[in-house]
Image 1 (cartoon, helix red, strand yellow):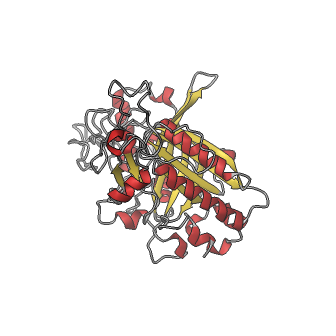
Image 2 (tube, one colour):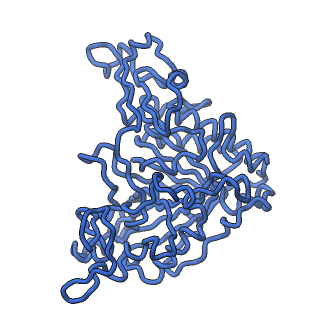
Image 3 (tube, helix red, strand yellow):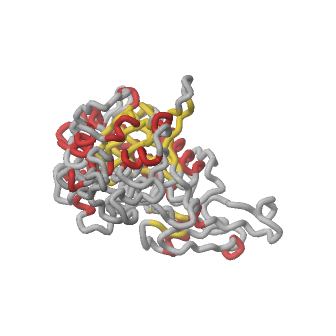
Length: 439
C-alpha cells in the first residue's frame, strides 16, 4: 500500500491565480464561463478570478466583506479549476484532493440504453457546470454558493453488469472480466461492483458534497444508489512544503507512484487510441477497494516493527536500505548479522514493479473513517482507487503477490471491491460515454 499509492501534489495551482475584486468588474460582476473564455484553457488546472464570478461571493452590505465594501477574492485553493473536456476524464492524473465521495449506481428496472444515454448526458452537463464553479442548471441546493471550483473533479465509469442491462454485451471489454478471488478478501457484495461508478473529489468538503447531491438528484428514476463511501486527504497548504501524503497508519504513502512525466506513463495507465473496443480509447480501468486498517493492532507495534512491515522509515519514507524518500531501494543489502535490511515480506519490496514483471498502477486513494464500533475499534482505512491500462497486467499480479505473503496483510482487511471501465474524456459538445452509447 505504501509504495504503489498516489503522489500528493499538495501545492498551489499550476498557473498563477488571478486575484481581483468585484469592483474591478463592476457591480454585477462577470460570469465564470465568460472569464474562462477570455483566459483560454491553458492547462489542466487554472487559477480563476474570485470576487463575484460564478456564484456571488458577497455584496457591499455583507458582513464578511470588511470595511472596504468589496467582495473578498477567492483564495487559490477555491479558485483552482480542473478541465472537464479533454483527452482523458478528470480525476485520474490530478493531485489528491482533500475531500472525496465514491458512489455506485445500478440502473433501475426497465431502464436501458436510451435511459443510460440520457443520464450520462445530464451528468456530463452538470459536471461541466460544477467544475467551472457554476450552479447546477436545475434546483441547485446552494451548498457551494460561496465557493469556487476548488479543484472539483467528477469521473464516470461502467461496471460489468452495465453492458447486459443496456444490450451492449458485444462492446464489453475483455479487461472488464471480474477480478479473481484473493484469499485475503472479506468482501461485502452489497458494497461491491455496480452498473455505474462515480468518483468525486474537491479541495472543499462542501463543494464535494454539492457535486454528490447534484449527481444523485440527476439520476432521477433511471438509476438508484447501490453503495456510497466518503473519504478525505490532507488539505492543500497544511504542510510547510509539498510532500507525499500520509495514510492513517502514519506512513508516507505514494513514493513510487508512476508520474505523468515518465516516458511509459500513458502506456501503463491509459488504453491506447488504437484499441478494441474503440470507445475505450484514451480511457483507463479503475479498481476500487475499501481496505479497512486494523489500527488498534497496528498501533501496538513499535516504530521499528512498523518500519519492517512496510520497508521504509516512518518519519521520512526513506527505504530501510538508506538514503532519502526517492533513493532506490537496495534489496540485497544486509545488516551485521547477515539479515536483509529490507525484510523479504516487506510491503514495499513486494509491490515493486521489478518484483512483479513490470506491473504498475497509479494509486489515487482517499482515507476514510466511518465511526467507532461497539467494541471500540475504529472503522477506518483506505478507499483504494488504482488506475491502469489493463487490470490483468496492473492490479491483479500485484495483489496476487501480496496475497502470498505481504507482512502488511495482517493489519488490513479488503471489505469491498469493484472494477470499472472509465472511457476517455468527452470532447466539446460530447457527453462522457457517448461513443459507447451512440456508437
